[in-house]
Image 1 (tube, rainbow, N blue to C red):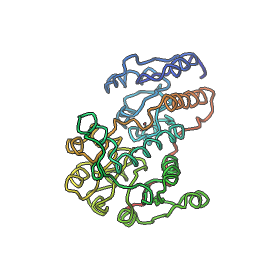
Image 2: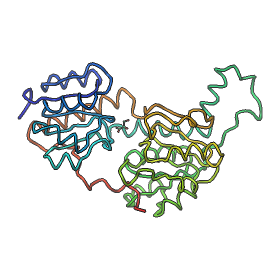
Image 3: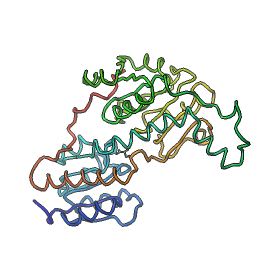
Length: 335
Ligand code: DGY
């Protein structure tokens, strides 16, 4: 099947150039309203389409694929994370799943680096103080944060985004530590002067700033559990732009409140919106899941979606198809 005869259903509004190109190439059903579809709405679209282009938040589980019927053949996800899709269930029904890796890595890394700088240097607290009229002139002892240069950054899941963060962090004088299931390419390890930690627990006890960059899978749910968060030194910070579920957010909020962790910079949350305690904590910078939110990233993500659908329509294997069992390197070791 090719071109205009292929029915492609979107589940969210995408950048205008992406929607225009999709509509030129395929019989595309747009979603004019930016609100996420209900489960019933998603199913209605999927049943009547050859390709569904969902995004994070659209829960495509086994029951969904069961109910979606026979027509659906490709799920071309707009986004890199695929924890909302049951890939095995899709594949079992002959449905290919693709995502949009790589194109957002640099922008996401910029945001992680911004958090790595913002939290120890109390950037948002400073802005707030000024806005609230609490700035009474420079003082030798007011608004003191902590130096970033010379600190140890521990990356959990050094893949594309983790590597891009590590490169930036090196330029700011941090040393790089990482924990993956498998070591990265020795040339890259050497270039980053990166220290591999076989034991996540030992790395956590050693570093000053932790950056969470592994994907969310059943194995990484609450990887940073209360027990592991307690291994951090009291001056340590946690930065997470991956998925909220990887960190036990309640434990993190409590430990920050108790002064047993120095602070956090978060772009993602376990339950969608941040924990109340985190919202009130001064030494925490919270962003509304915007690490990949640049015009450039979102258009390039759309281009990946289009390339994947086009290749599929032309009878080829889409380049970004998810193959279960591959790309496991940046997962943590079990246990
Ligand atoms: C993704 O692509 O999964 C990101 O979380 C979007 O920012």
